[in-house]
Length: 259
Image 1 (cartoon, rainbow, N blue to C red):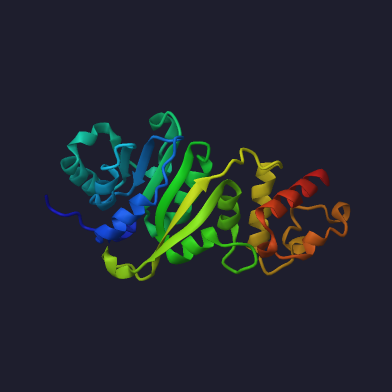
Image 2: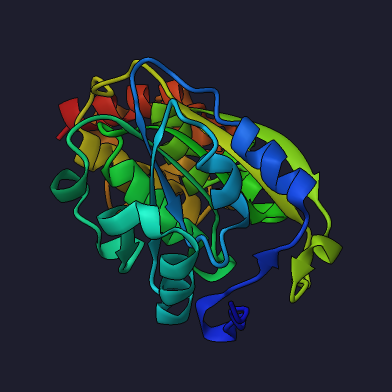
């Protein structure tokens, strides 16, 4: 089979190191709660080779690149309709998966945030994720309050997942090599079904707080809060990066009650 050419507009950097591929697949903790795994952007199948050896999982692959899709059709004829030609960002999970799933992949760096938000939208089904990201994005996902890396993505992900930074990957193990370092993280769904506040307002408060992260929350949230009703709430004198998920939930509830 002729090899697939990496396409810049799709953000493709094919992993070539089999040891790292195996390490990524083995980072799936597994659970009695899911039996199906979806690999996003399999390319030429270096992760897929190891995934398909895991007989405890039913493996699905999705790739938007028609060249990769046709290559994988020849490589894994046994997959049939479990090999999907399509855009992960447009996938209707409930049409494909009846129950809980895990997601794995060497994700295209140019849409990594969109992938994570897609996972968040489907958090009731996606209970584990192991993924390769640009190192800075991976650090942001796992970062704790108090640092400049901690941001919107950190709060949203950590509200519903335990986020673990697993290991760093050098550029030389990809073809073509990216201009940045990469890293693998694992998300494990926590037991939070509902945050205990108005979740739509929660998203709004977190986004507004970090969109003007140099300002105190009292000023950053001026379009969201009733300053008079909240009075001297001390949390409003802090910047967004100082607040944990629980703090944001508390603040959202205060704002909601002060409307």
